[in-house]
Length: 616
Picture 1 (tube, rainbow, N blue to C red):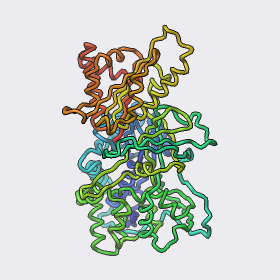
Picture 2: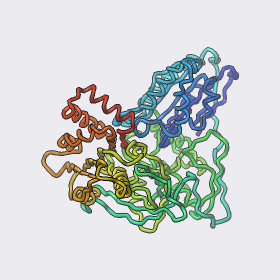
Picture 3: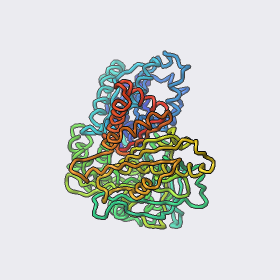
Picture 4: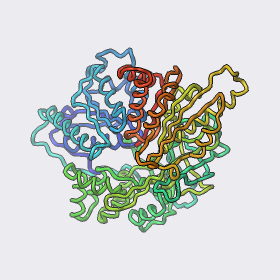
């Protein structure tokens, strides 16, 4: 909260402008960018920091004039940049840019990624390379944050920031009197809250303009009632007045906006605004300041709506939250503990107390009873709810089908934590309303999904089979539609689907559909499903084993010039294991050496005939 400083003996000539540009899909890069800005403002008074979403940055006129730009970027999907970075990246790739186009620019890059993905931190690496190619000077070596590391991206970020502090201190020190002083001053609140004299306000959404309202038609458990994993088949129907034409394609995703659990909302009221009626209507005005897209926009709603649908009170706080909260602690002991949790020295404590325990904003406020920021300050400290993405399991229509695994975890201290969105979806009843946004998925951009023709190899363990089901159904509909126009001379379309789960009688998702497909074959559209049940025999069997045992079938399809391979599911080892299994097929059945097999797969990737959609 206290991040501005008053300086003595520093003139405007002693200041240095530094731009921090971030590109994010989930909001993490934004949070990291503002965390970096706060650390710089605290450690180096001579820096003037400007934090900007790359989507809002006028790169054509500003970038060639910048002196110092720090980039914080995440990697999405199959090594792609966030959608907000699309225009900026296209600009950097222009062939008309000369090798010295950015010769005045000093830069550094920090990437946010997950090393379980094949294309780990690909966006950051490519950006770093391209900026060097255009003549930029790299002031600090690229930093790569890894979600798989012991402390996630935190360690890598701390080291990267420390190197910048050393760099900037060396530059600014000669221009600043050694006797300068600074005084910590509170910033003005970014929000103005006014209680309105009405309780008749209609439901309000400060969300995406493309939101679609749907109604729950069906919510059925797919796994056996005694099985430890609850997976839901949820069917939603788009309202009649909202035409589904062009809304989504097979392979697309739905971003679902969830509501916080009622018990969590009640707890938040008892902690944050215990003496205020939950039906009270508030007008929230966001005052001009540095824009944070992860925070509340201006809105009028009831307090109940604010905690139910907007504030992420059930989310897990970042370290910066503890630092901000410490300012409001009246207990010295609590203030010191909050400061420790926010410090580098307290990283172990922060991960043990907060990250591994999945402790929420609301629970932290409950634990630190003397720290009670006013509501307008909490709006600065707690982000808004971000939608969760789910692959659509149905072909385009008014109905949207989802296959949702309910996230459930027991923490080191034995607390059972349920995923906020998956738990919300699992509890929905028929007739309830769900709001969502439809997005293009990686798989829907594949060559296969252009015409839904040609042989295909589909690999989807667990809920990864959801988008593949949608694509299979669309292929079936296309062949059915073209059936009367086809001739006996038209080559049939062959599809191999490799599905994997633990037990046939426990979590065989869409199992009856796969069995029916295996027994009902058409001459023009032949689908063969090979299912691996890892725990139904003494030796575990996975989809990669099935690919290996059916290598000749796989090789027969791979030889076809229009064959596509689509892989969907867990991002950990599965995608790379599948790739290795296919490389082995190319070598064993196709007689290729290792480099030739790698080239074969690389060419499929370049032509969008090999697509991986994975999530962690």
